[in-house]
Amino acid sequence: MAFCDAHLHLADSADPEGSITFASGAKIVLYSASTNLRDSGRNLELASRSPDLIKAFVGVHPSDADKGLDEKELESLSRHATGVGEVGLDPKYSAVTEGSAQLRVFRVQLELAERLRRPVQVHSRGAELACLDNLESFDPPSVLLHWFEGSELAPRAAAKGYCVSFGPAILYSKRLAGIAKGYPRNLIMTESDAPVTYSPLGEAVSGPFLVPTVVFFLSQLLGLDFAEMARTVSENSRRYLEGKKG
Image (cartoon, rainbow, N blue to C red; front, side, top):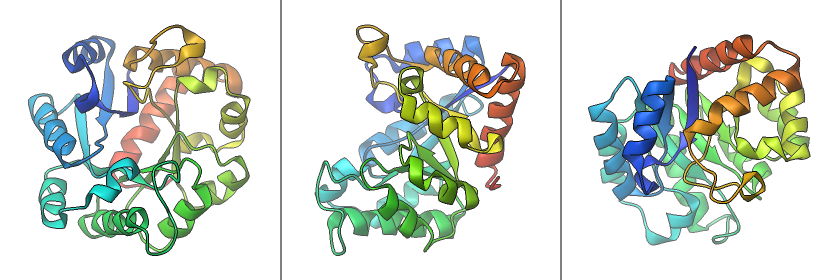
């Protein structure tokens, strides 16, 4: 049985080798997202050592958008990567309005994903509507909405064939469970978002080892056998990487 951690940050982990070793034994493919260009280079290095296990996504996170963007370097890195991410918008860090650095950097990266035909991973916290509005102006081969909380916008995202990845927070978040229950099964993926921790689950709980637990929760929520849920998520993840929407 295979699993997929569709969104984590190996380059930010205090023990990336530990996560990689566990994932190898547990048959969990890792889609490692980046925060900035330095992380992007590190993710490419990790993926080059274990290409079947680690898929590198390169990009600039909203938290780093105000620091500027070397577009030529980003394009060079993207040509060697599986996908583009983590990109998006988040008003927690800075403005996301027209003319803002965040919005410009987001659009530059969406254009790059479209042009190079790379799947994209999108951060949309607090800016779900703005992210969907901008996504619909571009045509990347496939889209993953990581930790998407826009319950009222979920039907719009589903209609576009966007995948949504659910992480350990679904174990205690009624909002996330509600989105998952109503979302098309062929668009559901799983993530750990490591090294993010989940205090309701215990002190400093984090890592890809939580992914099978998320799959089990989803199987109970959706009324599926655990093995069937695992197969569904694995197939969805494979199709996403291949740039196939829905």
